[in-house]
Length: 255
Image 1 (cartoon, one colour):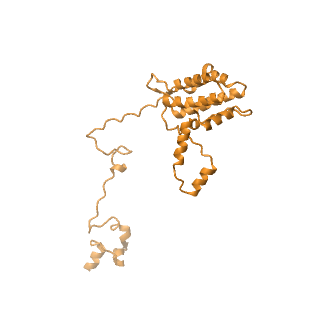
Image 2 (cartoon, one colour; image 1 turned 135 degrees about the vertical axis):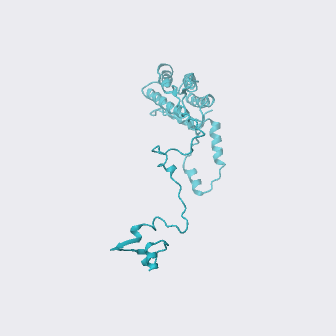
Image 3 (cartoon, helix red, strand yellow; image 1 turned 135 degrees about the horizontal axis):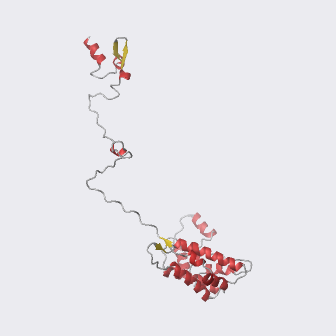
């Protein structure tokens, strides 16, 4: 039995001045599913006053998520049965026309491709195709066709259903990685291929031992200046020279 909400949506199609609109699959619920979702929500405690007011002011329609579900003949058949029963109860179309239309969609959406490089449509692709098909049915109904003739046209005359639900190409598998030589080095050769200029092959830094001068301590431009025939150390004159083998310090100390 379709839910009351689904019956009201379908009944609104045939009110004078209205048109057929696509019904989302989340709303194609049976009365049992509708009540189960309602009961699961009422058991949750409302912790804040804002949450209580939001549930009282806004119509939170129960919805069944379908995007993450795997497409199967049993699941698709249940959704189709609920929806076509809702249309038949509202006297929109004969149940035989609805079942013939649903059977064609079910056969194409759940077919087993003989070629392993092909696949059937996914759930999201099937929902998108259903939206386009019902848009075309709505156009025929607005042009003066009754719903029985529009369904027969889409089922047996036109090729829209077959084109939208045709097999897709399966994505190719990722390429296999070649086996690694156990005797090969773990590091690569770098961007240049030389093996020494890459980031992964940078030489390890050496720890500075106490008593050995560094690169900044032995720079000639920073420490030693020449004036005439004499050479003097700037750091020694400032009293900051700690280098033992400073030439200016040795010459002054010996003089």
